[in-house]
Image (cartoon, rainbow, N blue to C red; front, side, top):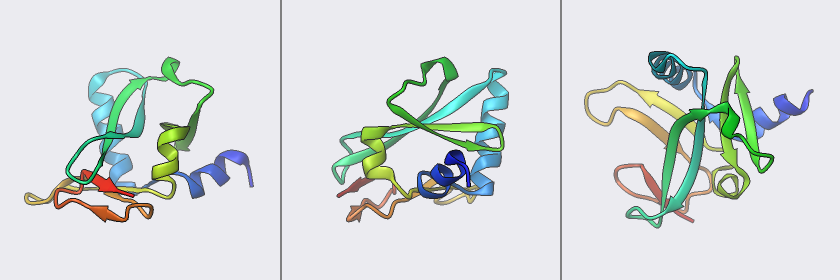
Length: 118
């Protein structure tokens, strides 16, 4: 088992549905971008999830990189302490749709699912 495979299995998980969605969003930008996932202080439960596309040149030695069929998810190591084992999924349901975070480290989550407490 390679290091990338080990990291992918234990770090940030990405469902097939979420992978299709982020690839589709990236393709609309017409650039080869990676997805940065992290946390920041705030939100109704204490910490908020954040994610955005960025150029791969922004990846630092302090980041962990998870490869999904050539698509890279990047997370700084401090955020990964809170996100280790996170499952990122996507739903196109009219109510409650969008990206969904299932975080095994969260002691509590808010109703919107975009923030959590540890």
